[in-house]
Image 1: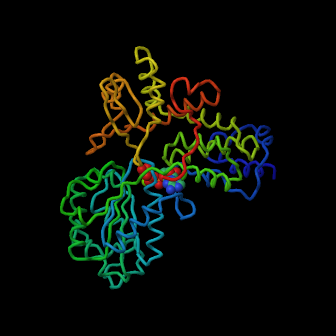
Image 2: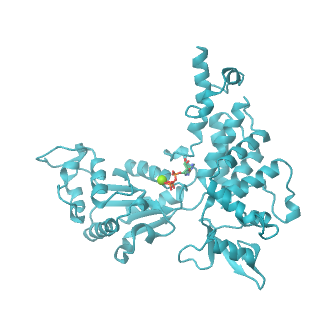
Image 3: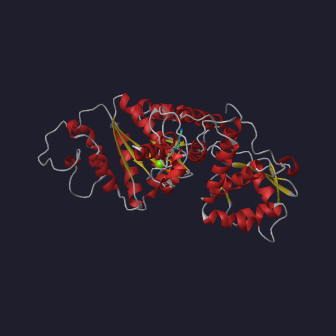
Length: 431
Ligand SMILES: Nc1ncnc2c1ncn2[C@@H]1O[C@H](COP(=O)(O)OP(=O)(O)OP(=O)(O)O)[C@@H](O)[C@H]1O
Ligand SMILES: [Mg+2]
């Protein structure tokens, strides 16, 4: 019984798959359990899992409406793209639920590096329930509706023929992780399929999802299908949405986040749901480990330290080389200013020039620092966006924010003295 209590407690603290399950029995037993009706922290904050269900996602209403309009009213195909971890798969889940409620039959697949047009199409058709088939197939072997496809290499016309053999008003094929596909021919065949479906008004729509900064990187250069596609470049979440994610998640986990905790997460995440989920989880775990339902600064310190410890060696060494011996004086403060510069909803910062400085997102950088950041590829220009830059690796942004947060929490950093805004600044509301 005592053992099962410990197991339940470990699950509640989200240790089920972690080394800390092996914590000494006496130490674990000393930690009081939080209220039984609360959800597990790892069920509430899910940095490694896409979300599903309207109630579990914050924001994304505008993007969902745009996707539904595209498919339902404009009979267009959708390409959803963004940098990694911004919530594409979560939004796809939400879209699939909404489409199914409107009568669509949705099949989905996730690509691998080896995926081809053939393997993707077959995997999608396997995901269609055989009960939908409106025709008798001579050879009913295979999963789902797989038997409807010819054995030879598939052509766009084979895909266009699918809806005619199904009893359903319309079909949506969702292809996730399309950026992983290395075979160029697959992109061309998909574009040809989209063209064919559009030209013939066939009610089968594709939603192609992948990591990219541009539409072209995802589907390739196919001007013939541009007008048949609605591109959706998924924005970051707004600060108030991140704050809402935290407070709501806290309530579900039986934890109350202080304003300082919410501000910390908002400021470190800078609109990135993945980071908000991760930091939210670590703070919650730290508070529960103390047996407290109220987050305290000590939990923020524990969470920040843990994330700093888990930062990749590549990011740590990039930072060290930037602020190390021989670098610009005050480089760490400059970096802090830069990672807090004004960004647009896609994380891009406007660049302007004065005779002696480069102004990035409203923050002045000496020319030498700007040159170094561009030469080393820390800042990059997004394709087709001449007057903008973005961080190549968002990990560096988090690292700088976390270091500053650690100093803030230790009361070491005097933000006003170096002209930087205090890290724990108030959260802006609205967009
Ligand atoms: N709208 C949202 N509300 C709450 N959490 C979200 C939201 N969108 C994404 N998340 C969280 O952010 C993280 C990343 O989400 P998701 O896996 O959907 O992103 P992605 O863009 O598909 O990532 P990848 O590029 O790695 O495939 C997950 O932890 C997910 O739970
Ligand atoms: Mg994804």
